[in-house]
Length: 325
Image (cartoon, rainbow, N blue to C red; front, top):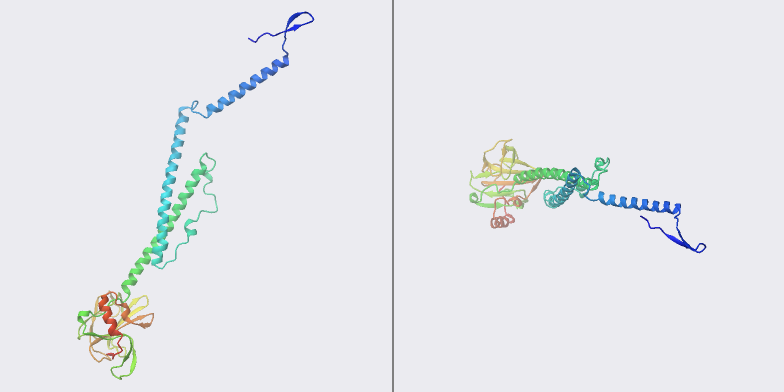
């Protein structure tokens, strides 16, 4: 109950009761209601931001949201690891594999390209965590695209490796007569004295002196294009097309062990040493052609000679002596 207030009236020499004005009552009432409303609003805000008024379902949904946020955080870390591993693979792909097989590196902008045009993530907008979800979706899409590009690149590298393997098997890389079957390497590639005219002329191959009937082996994989004696001076001879612009020729044979059109592998027996055609003594005249040009066969013996044997052959091949054909 509010206190009753009095004032002293000097005219009547007595105390009179103070009667409050109605406007003051209304003002006090207004401030009381306003204060109560503000206090209630503040209390409501506090309650809404706590779990005191949440129902069990709301609490369950809140835990589920927090769990999803945790899962997105874990997913983000896994994506970072995937991006690092993928970046390492891409670096090796560009700077080792593609470089080795002489393929152009894949540009960085092609690997990292995003997705232009239509907004692919519009359906993910408007939610509390839309930014996190959209960012994760974009990163996953880019990783997926990078993996597709890398997969295609590795398929290309596999084909290049297979082609490289075929090339290495096809190059005429071994000596056509075994060292143990040789008497000597009679003449090398270059200017030599003709055995019949004694004139100085270009000798386009290498002459290996060996007994008649000594086995001759294909120096690389290929297809026999000729096995006949219809080429002037060569007598019985064999030509093998190795592909990639390479061709090898074996002349002055005594006998064939292959026929035209036959496919051979490096090291296959193709014929035997003889003395047919324009030849002074039993030997093998051996040539290597690249893109129609005759080149020095001594540069292709890395597949069958030791460094010492190659050094010895190089010394004899560089001697300007008399050829045998």
